[in-house]
Length: 385
Image (cartoon, rainbow, N blue to C red; front, side, top):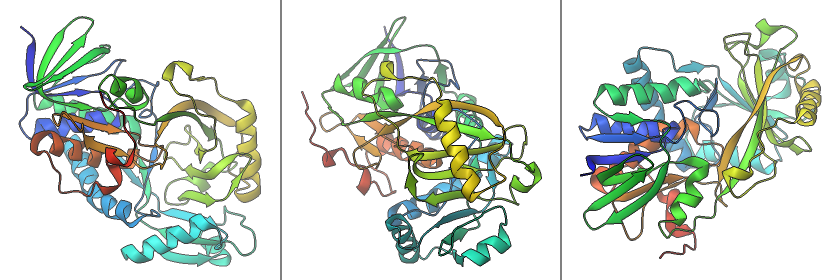
């Protein structure tokens, strides 16, 4: 007889751990399965920090962050540890840049409080920047960082405290939906559930293909670099913001950075996109590129001269991209008890607690009060069995 659960969650990364947390909070009997060890480095949800911000170039995302921030604060309080560090956030670039214009238009439409700063005002507030004549900035004080691994582990720990069963190092071999629920097979066990939530990151395409869904996902191995500033005290949270540079070049698309409280971590600088993609996780090369870290240093030396001193550390993690860079949060078109979260496209971590809640809502009620209009499976030409 298979062990029975109300909901089985596959994948214990940022979204899966959050889904397990909210399902457990709703009183459901939950199983959370992870193919690797908890807090592993193979996917997208490990590390010191990810940006959290209201500032988005689509008002739907701004409104979703209005839902997400209170959830993070509530999680932080329940976990009893700091998960969010407020730094303020600066988007800078030439105002004629399309991304800059879209951002400003979205903030105006959303009626989000922000400051539109000229070069001199930015220099007065943050002399660490050396911007070009004509550059401007959009500043929001609520931007900051989330402590990535601590957030994932907090969701997981609190789900367990509410009775969730968490099993790591247990890859799923097969998912069999039926009229009565779903069966999940691993190498060691067979589990039964009324519902299932699939949140497996870069492994989603292969697993969903077995469910008759050909989701057009690509995997991008991006690289993170942490540099020792010349004067570390000038790059602490409170003295230096998270930043986004609205520009492209041979370093990649839209460089951004995150300051840290611990000077031994350094200043994180990377870019959103710009690396080659692969189709399967088995094709990922996790070897960091020294050439790329030097290109980033060259870029930083122009716009933030004291930022990128010696390289402290660098590593690669994975973006799982949809063609439009929007998420997938939906139910299987033929098996509504199969709920899918995928394709978070390199900008999803700040939403993970909200995405987990939305997936829990879909698993429990079949709907969610949050706006999922951007995230439907129906926007893709799917091939179902």
